[in-house]
Length: 322
Ligand code: ADP
Ligand code: MG
Image (cartoon, rainbow, N blue to C red; front, side, top):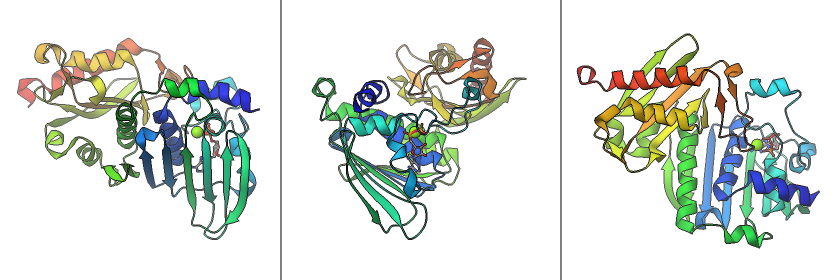
């Protein structure tokens, strides 16, 4: 049902960056150790994600483009125990309903499948020979939804949003080697060796990374750790603050605010620190099903967590601890 897919696409696929996020999360779910992302014109012309993950079995390729066909949720309770990033089976069908999609995938070293889909219709399918992994190309996003296209910001803005998502995905997955290029120019390359500090260096630059301090702390419910910048290293935007919950990048206003509050009066008005705060908690304390794109989450005992974050950062940047 292409119309239903397009309606779902309205929620899941807001802009090129949403496509990048969904495709990279699929690559992560597939157990990839290397993920290469190429975009053209802020992702509006082309987005390509290449991974070396487990691939999709020949017989499952069409299924992957059917809504909810692949949903991994069995009962409502399972929502709290989600290990993989994808769990709704909505992304691929949604994306394929509003773009030209070409997918190549193979689960072993000899045979794979190539499939072309245009606006939800399968145009071509054939067996191919390729190495294990998946390569998916999404071209002409929103070609059949002029109203949505009209709302796209400039190529520059869309690229900035994609870049931001790529940075956060790399921060949250230090064991994966990511590359990201825009119109042929490499913008990000991580080693994938599991080292968070090196990943931060690759993203923010060696000199900025040198001005970031490691911290860790815990209470009965939460373990937190990460890197926060010296109060002198700030930016005029909150984009340099990343929060991960159980390894997943999330958005939560209260938690970002707690990080900023940790700096107290050390930050000038309108200036924000660099911070990567990774929180480990019992999945029962988090509800990730607030929004289909899964970035917004609700947390039980949020006040307690905010206090822990704020105090840990305040303590780490206290003059006596520098
Ligand atoms: P979800 O991730 O919520 O399951 P998606 O629509 O994003 O739904 O993907 C549908 C299915 O296609 C996935 O469940 C997975 O089985 C398969 N899939 C998608 N992308 C990849 C990939 N890069 N590697 C392996 N399998 C993939
Ligand atoms: Mg997915």
